[in-house]
Length: 389
Image (tube, rainbow, N blue to C red; front, side, top):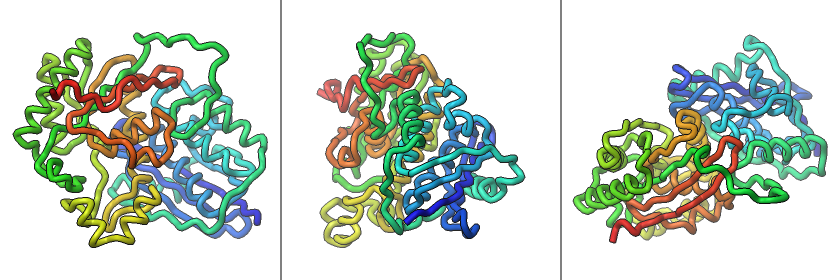
């Protein structure tokens, strides 16, 4: 069955960077019927990050609806020209988003991009503003599987992905000869999980609850801070989730580094575990067995009253893009939680979703990811805990 759709997408930021959100509308080309709407916040980000996020959301919705042909219409000249292959993607923060969009394009028979003036993109613009006001949409259920032969659109998608580099699950052809990239040109993110809390010690789901570090957690944070200072004498800044267990850990790192600035990034906040907050895995499996199994089986499924890993991934990619754009060529510490750090590592390693349930991250563990201006990525350390004794 062939289904042609129009995807109208937009994004905006109040401050550029500032509180940002995206909107996307999927319309059946033959009838003009609206098949799906998507809108959500991407935390603090730029207009371009929000616009790319809107494109990704629209393509995902089109794929879930079984579309085979997609006409993308946006009022962002930059996104249209870059995704059409006519403009280079010079901003390293946008390359992972462009490559994620390119991967999605690979699932359709054909995809076209058309620039339209803002007044013709009112529906998507309204949804983006709704997202910036705090609204969120519910993803539609897929109605058909997408299966398509090779095409010129797919070839273009692979080319864009190769040029963008670095996103999750995008296959990039290896170079004919390998030359170590210049370390001085990389943006180094030293990823630090916050120190232990009482809920961490009891192995309870701890998402949006603002629990403080325990005494042991404060010691762990201080030890991690000393290790970061030794690893990065030139540390430029500490970027942190807004929750107290992270800001306390970030303060220790900033102090050990000689008083570097601490910047809050809302997009780095932990997954919202909803009704599971404060419960152990065993308690959740006993009280919500069916819901837990669905959650384990699919990143698109959310805990009751919470958010899915798929939703978190979009937020984390937006936060990553904003952080890379703001700190290009420097070394920064990024203090966050289990889920966001796993997703940053998943994208860096081009790992499958199974990675999320197989990687264990200790409190105050350190991971290191380098990203170069051309989009190349190197994971140098994962869950290092030598500093904890």
